[in-house]
Amino acid sequence: MKKPETGAVLHRESTGAYLCRRLREDWQLYTLLIPAIIAVILFHYVPMYGVQIAFKNFKVSKGIWGSPWVGLKYFERFVNLYNFWDIIRNTLSISVYSLVVGFPIPIMLALVLNESRSLRYKKVVQTVSYAPHCISTVVMCGMLILFLNKSTGLLNNISAALGMERCDLLNQPKYFSTIYVLSDVWQHAGWSSILYISALSSVSTEVIEAAYIDGASRFRKVISIDLPSIMPTVIIMLILRCGQLLSVGYEKVLLLQTDLNLDASEVISTFTYRVGLVDAQYSFSTAIGLFNSVINFMMLVFVNWFAGKVSETSLW
Figure (tube, rainbow, N blue to C red):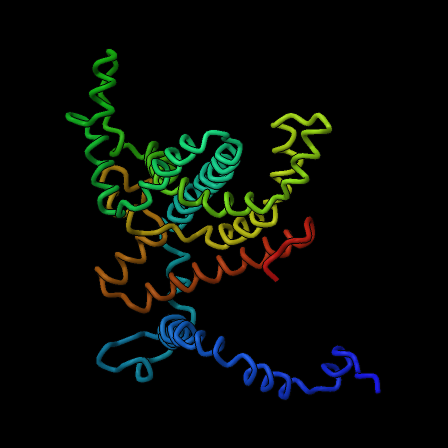
């Protein structure tokens, strides 16, 4: 007697029965997922309970449930701040600048290393470019402050030796975004290129050999073979980066921030830090954080939809 096809069996099998069968067959693999699932629930979903204080006049003595509802009061307060648009502009300028400059460099570095024929040279470059990623943010900012010091900084000493005037770069608002972005590229470009190097390693050697036999140059091989092969990875990473467009980390900005460059360095995350932790305005800071998260989520959905329209790659 001929056995029914697998697809027919799955079609007649209910969803609940199918899931139970998979759990019985692969229970060891699902057991390994339990710690990760617990961590996600504890640190990502349970804290969502506190988001409601963005809509309440939260008092510690009354607790979350006992605090009165105020609706969108704190959202309106944030939008009506005198420096609201300055904060948004600073956040967007740093994020877009970092995206335009910092996103392509790891891709180019991966392509260059992939084309290197010297294994020793490739290892040296990888080691040198990966090393800054291991430096903590505090140490990195301390190095920048020392290098950019007007009196004793390395850059100003070189400028003075060349007959140029010393410049207090860190305290000038117009240079803050450039300092932030270029130092971030130097610190993370090598580490970020690992993903693209891994994607390039999956390119078929037969295709590459066929291209060289047909007379393709190395540049043509990069354009016609390497880039298309890593394009799905590039699109996914770009979608994720666009979903964090308003999420500029507060640590580095706060450590490089001074009273003189505040006009260019005050971003949403540092403002939230001051309001929430320094001034203890918990409801106001939660409202700002929720506002930021909603905008990022909307941007993620839009960019993912657009990527799905123009290509075959998207998150969902």
